[in-house]
Length: 416
Image (cartoon, rainbow, N blue to C red; front, side):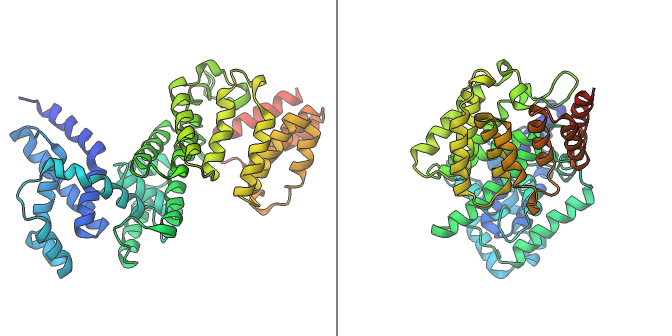
């Protein structure tokens, strides 16, 4: 007989791993994401009450779905639902138990539908991120708030408003088709990449990286790649995240300071993640289309294949940034990175000339990496005083305390 602690730990693990599937199944039935989450929570409470007494079922997800669907047709829920929804529930909940094999047959489709609903363009990017982490990541409101350094009530309101907005907009619980699919898929990929980037290079707070967010984004990306294997951009994003994540062990020094790419100890890079990233890139390129994520992954692969910084194929990277500029025209961040790659091929003066042309770009006015990049090239040209000024300007713009400390330390080192 399992102890109460074992059962509680199992329930927590099941919720973390299976909550998205449970909510997805219930959302298909109810056509209401908010109600589906409530029913899933109710089923979890039932598990907390009954599993310590009755034991852990052979198929926890089937048990939870059965309980949730039963509760969905009780009098309290019936009063809150439209007649059409009630009829759908009645038809779908005819069986007292769930056929586990049948459940597995359509759960992938349900999960894919839920991803597209949570990342619907009708919501703001912030709302999409919060709702995705809540419904698909199984994170609590407190965990999401902590990850993004936000107040818990603000995150809770964001999630409530997102669910209400989806209901009011009458968003269909379905996978879009044709041109609609491409437009909506870009929103899904954007959300996953936003989550990854916030973990990989935190924009605010004391932590330089937040590995849990990177892991969550990678998990979502891998799930999506399994659900839509014919979409090259999905594999491209997975490749990009795998390759970036492979550097995590080398991104901080023993004191917790950020170590820039060219200064990292590449022996510490995770070779398994590199192999997975290169394999995902291969799958993307085999599908033919080269969008923004596929090209960015190809750039990251150039770094991954170089055993030392000096071995990097910078000419290839410059060419890839040219390709990326075609895919993402008039993007000043792409041009900034392209300028730094050109500096590695043609010298710092050539790169600085390109950076200077970006000085008035509105999108870069508060972007601390522009003065930081200028400082790097100015220092290489021996213009130390100007470089220090740029580093201090970059530090003033940086949102992350880790970035700010690193930039000021570099300025002090140059002045010394």
